[in-house]
Length: 189
Image (cartoon, rainbow, N blue to C red):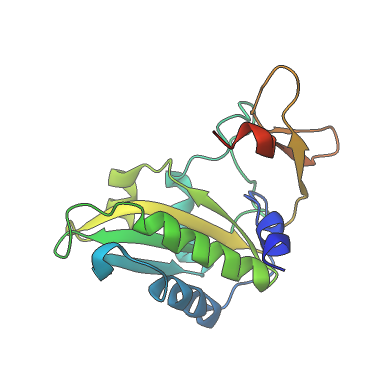
């Protein structure tokens, strides 16, 4: 069951923008992150939630989408996320956030997948512009943005081919292909 959930949890970048994600759902997802592991149990992460078209519109222009897809600037209107969770590090609690935000993001995305949602973890962020747009206080470091919604694309895993290329691509039908290295190539010793 866990394997199925992990395999279904892909980086979705196109969504059904007409199907909203409720704020209560976002709170439930953040609660999963809240209950997840935290280095030294410091719990330095904070979360900004967005699920309205107006607020989502303030976030979207400050994100970069799918670096390997050079001719694709990101989802078009109608296919944009209907919700975001911005993961922040509270510098009043800690100066370094280690891998806490990765653990939190994975917990949120697995919870989203379990609820039939999809998401994408975005680290390529115009942080200064996003901070200004949302009036995020300086005490919070912007760590990640999770784009969420009901997936409007198919993402499939592929084996890495003989060239060793790991770049994802879209085929003529718009299916998103993601190469993964073989298990035997991942285990050392």
